[in-house]
Length: 398
Ligand SMILES: *Cc1c(COP(=O)(O)O)cnc(C)c1O
Image (cartoon, rainbow, N blue to C red):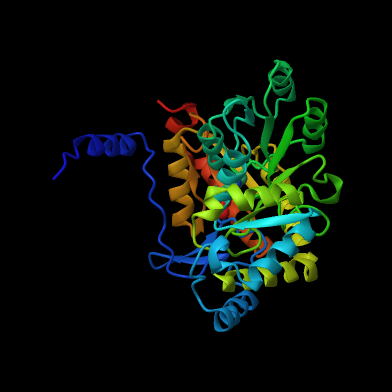
């Protein structure tokens, strides 16, 4: 038996730093109300922004998809796992995002690895917002390109990096909506900057697709076509309620990824039944704009009331509404108290967020009702009033 001492030591350290991750075990479907350890909780932690993850019409589409196309795809896309629903979904996603073509992946993590690692490498440079999603940062590091991070949303800093002379290709990468902060990049400004410096711009729209844009097309759409944002990534496991992801781009880029992207080639295609379910989600996106409207109303309402209560809001207009609490212990304490009151709000701690910036990551969805948001606000108000002094004085992690 190997000596596990070093593993045990690091695990113990995690626990002591209040960084241990103990996910709730759901004994129900995803939704606004979930069952956890026999308790019924109102869920403010999922990315199911449109409330589609357990929609009965998606369930039916998945079941019908499985009857017609089977369960497993049986092979990778390039061998014989690419079925008609996959192709239909790629065409619909390209149309929705206003791109020539799209390519499916089993997850957003894989899609980001594919785009960055396949198209950029040694001799190129990759510049990323420092708060980009971990999968983008990992991909930048793994690409072998010269990898630099610029200060969050700081186009002056990015400009300085772009001004340095460079021979190879340059890629600038940003989240559209930042996953732990909820704030948004100035995509039009970034696109102009990139055009001036002949750099590629890649946008990860995991939290924008389905929610933003007049048709739910996300942060780019026709206003920022492929000539300005040549690489667009979207995920299907958030607002669309299913699973998987895609890259949308000009045809030549998609052809190249199909031929060379290792995370596309060397993995089994997602089940076609899932693609059938996602096609249904895209129908609902078009047919039920009131979901997006209700979500935006809830966001406005939550922010107005939270500001009145003096809660530590962050500058976000999206469904992600974090409350910045500082220390990990404090974030865990608030989360535990909310849980006792029947509310599921997860604490987000380092290394997912920078040290001293632990927070509650509150997410709103189209399925929440106003009175549920009120219930959350009331509990937060009480917590703020009753909080032990020790937490109020403590600003950062030890
Ligand atoms: C969730 C997420 C991903 C990863 O997508 P998965 O399909 O969950 O692997 C990538 N980027 C961002 C910004 C995300 O929030």
